[in-house]
Image 1 (cartoon, rainbow, N blue to C red):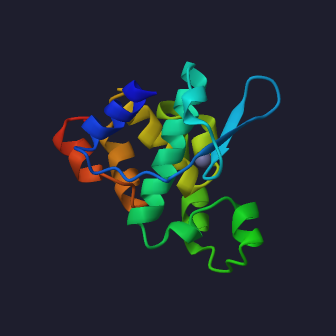
Image 2: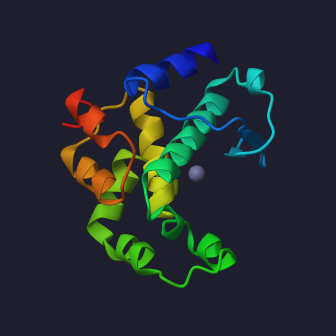
Length: 157
Ligand SMILES: [Zn+2]
């Protein structure tokens, strides 16, 4: 756990924010999902859980720095939250070329919404993956956290 926190601290130059609690839930099989809630963080020992934790910290910081965060969820989340302005969501979903790149360099799940794209990309970066400039442009477009720091560190090329 400490090593994850150290990684996030170093890569964001100490600027990452943290929720007081993050909860991770086991889904079917070995899949985990997380959200801000109730958790014993010490439980995070394996790689998969660590990834979900980093992913949730990505959401939290995206939320903290993006004024449009609430418009970037999945369609079901936007509907649940009564968000009727789907412009950002639709722009993301209609950009087929970028979705293809996201699928290739990040993961298929990252194409499910702008918010998931940002959180998955944050997770990749914290885990040491270098990403192409096209992904950086997209990361900036959807107000991803610490984009300037990541660029300065050469994590996008
Ligand atoms: Zn997520």
